[in-house]
Length: 619
Image (cartoon, rainbow, N blue to C red; front, side, top):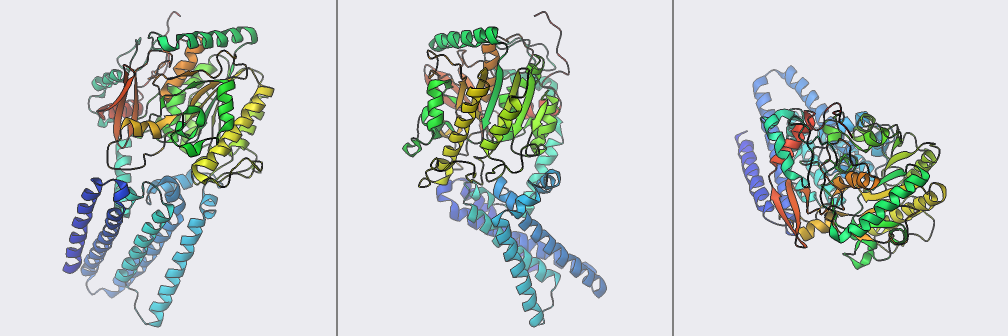
């Protein structure tokens, strides 16, 4: 027993040492250290469990009956835990996580199509389940033939060794860029970190004196703002005001006059906000190429950008994660520390695009390819006056699918079928999914569109996204031309290394998102124009309302119109909030305190972002 404890201490110390070393080494050089960390971590787990078993057996003494019961329970528990891990490999594959309790929560609340069938359809799951069965059956046959008594100690050590091998194996097969980080933790560490996160989220008051500290959140915001309350520090009387950027004033005036004159002639515009899954600006030729291999893979988006659109070329994604991008675009709300309002408090009081356009007698819609319960979509969007929420439950089950859900083309077709049958003006959000890993080209694309000689990701996937959006706009032009389309993405990509702090060049490459305002009616004198104002997804809602002339609206927007002389934005990466500033045509990036993220999270949890009702005012 003492020998096991000593080995445990040695492995734990070595594990910590390698973690420290790994943090100082970029990922490209740290794979070996990372795997060693993982092995030592799993070995330390084995030794501590072994020590605990010895301790229980010591307490039981010579009570053979209780030892036998303990033996049976432990064997069953070992098998259950191991197969539980195997069953969740699909979620490990998707979310880049070790086994965590939240996966059980997802499985419990998902529909059958996205829950068990998602597991069963995974080749990775079937492979490892088969291997697990083989190892268990073969080993128990071996034990029986050799007349080896299967003791609790043998069962635990055997199961944990298998766990260690499978844990390293599945991450290695995935070849995911965060594998280095994952391999540093064992199952106990994973449960601990999940518990820590849950504890923080269930204790929203962890920022002391939130009433006094919340006012600091205003320090993040630029432009002139008309605040209405100290209790709700973001509550504003109307949109933020600033001088129009002289560089883009002609474009602003022409675009604004076009939108408002068309509205006077033909009534309120239909609005469609397309959030394209994981699409980065550097992948699209019309937004400037970082990689010449991306040339000619997005011809439809390039054509639309030149003929029907105004581009915004310097939009930096505020963070990673679809659940973080949606509140940014829909509610003009930054999300720091990865605590999305959709998960933390989906019933939070906010004024979002759904609330605003519903008050203008619009029919409001949200279309996506996941199940309606995913990320609390039904709760969140219903709270914010979305009339129709259409997920995989409403889409024809015979429609084409990608790697995780219905194809973008199927989603666009379903969305247009619904929108075209609405008699009053509509505001719709379309959240696509095909470009999400695991990457798979849906079968609904015609032959000849995809160049199969190119890599699947991102090249073939971008070709599919480009084709499906081109088909969507083509049909929209024919059937519903009085529409403004905002085309953007939900999130940036993970930086391709870990450990070192990114430069703005790194951040721009990975976090810069495409943003276009399109209309089938776009005048030739405007089409193809671009605006290089420094912006974020939080600037979409105020820019749209500014162009429509709806400036006197109470809201909690953290963004402002992109046609202002805007010089600051924010991005959250690697547990750090970065301020990005533009001065004298030079862009710099600097860290700011994570206190702002903690304050914003607490305001979210305590419902201090916006009051239950608007304040009456003379408009």
